[in-house]
Image 1: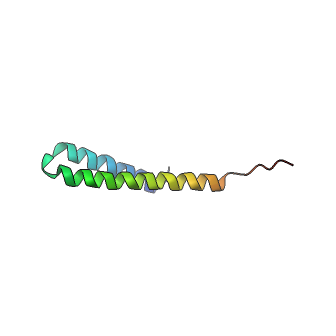
Image 2: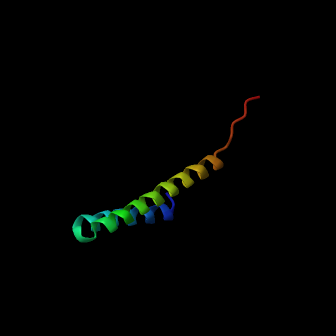
Image 3: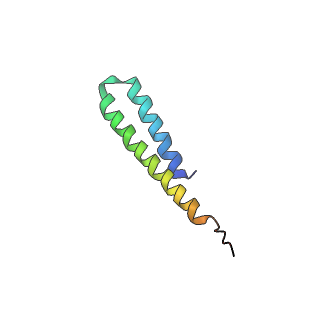
Length: 61
């Protein structure tokens, strides 16, 4: 996976862990976790598109 994906994934996990520890900021931290989760999905989709573009196309004759 790309470095951006790994960073977004790590940030998502950290935000979830912080939300579990401190109920006071739980709502804000869960919002952050959701934002990071969206980024992870974005990077995952981007990686998938890149892989599709890089795949050789077999043409039957």
